Image (tube, rainbow, N blue to C red; front, side, top):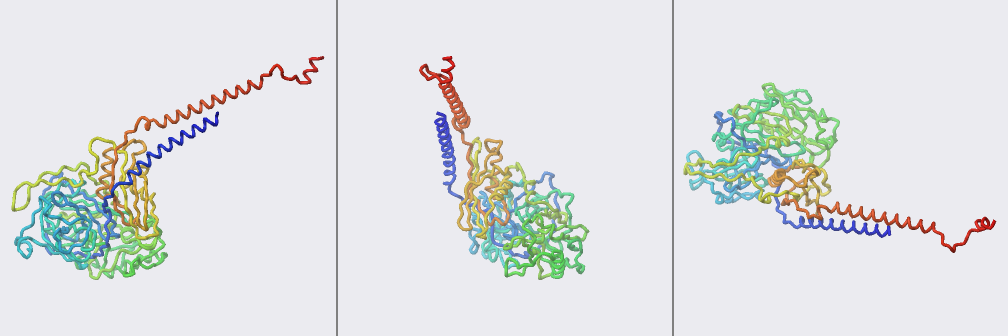
Length: 637
């Protein structure tokens, strides 16, 4: 009987387990039959630009009186500098908004995107701008202050760069939006609509250029002239292992630790600083006075990947650095076309490089010093683990050119109103989270600046205000899923999904336990990975505010991962409401436990009864039973 009860209990448990597994497989099957919608997260194509040509127009803007509450345009920066050669931000143009990925370039003065009428434009990340689809687009008509097209109807622009690329087209005016994190409402501005592009501009994945240099067509000058922001902007690039960062158009309060250098707007149209000396491991490089003061001086150019020193300064810097790491092995660079200076044996942990490589100091004319970490002058070897290469090269001319590598994890404030540039070492990936704006003001109508009309033009809605896939009404979200397509350059590389999950939780600002790997399929070096974001362990559902934050980060490409994970794309995300459990599903555990307890108690009771009956039968002696011989002798005596 006891064996029979245990068999029934096991059967019940198997039945319940099968029922639960069926429900889980049904949910998983439903998740696997969704049509993916590819949303690229990472751009490609390395940009080896060394220098940008600017307008010859140089003007010094006087700082207008601003309201203390003047807002800033706070914008996210994307991509790892050395995997792509540039950083981009997202900009929206037109009504309704058309989205573009633009290279952030302090060495350019024009903001431009490919036009739908372009006769020679490459294939870029986003569709071309279509003026006919924008209710607020107006061409900039030909006038004495601009170059005009052959028909003398519309103003044109033409930009040529040192790496032999070029961009040309017509000028138009439209509403430009800065994203849902920005406090600054959309503004009308003049931009370039490309009709032709060549060189790197043709082959790159980014759509175009966001010009932050000095000049009448610069997006900064236009916003300052409208008196909607202060005459300052800031850039902060992510570190060696994690890309991303933040850009702020407008004034910020400089931290007390920020060090400044004077910047002379009349010497050069480029953003320059007064670099006097360089120290390696505390020792000053023996260089002639004024070596960093040739031609344009020392120039900052965010559109340049690496740094370039005058030849004498480069040789001195290289020799001093190699003396400090003489115990490391010299190796060939990743690209045989370049004579890179590389060493191996430093280890894979980039956070420990400062224990191996020396500190470098840049000393300004005013005595202020900017400390450079190894990540500011090294880049990782792409073919040898634990190997690093020098990211500083000799310049063919006397100008000192400082590209993006030199300001990794450094907040750089271009304080144009006070003719100075400030530097502060910080974690730029974390800085983005600290400067994010919550509750940005809703866009308001704007009076057109065009001379052709004075009618009011309604501004477009904030482009990232409401995700289209968010479920309407009041509900509790029980699960958010998304697929990630990953492509690695090395077919032998095995992805560390545990580490990737931890990075996802950090980017989405959720607990590690909430991010779970649901499925992985692979073909060669291509992976399709499904992730699920579940409620926290102490909650039954994901709150609407948390879910909205996660969805916006997914949809607006806010996740950034180290370069070693290769190229990745986001596949359609989905948010499912919390399922209302039936009484049985809600109480099934209590029922099962009660059922098992009842059967166990019944089995114990039956076993005790049987045992008691068996003892009773053993103690009973029937009348006709034989008497033992010893007992019989005792009775007879």
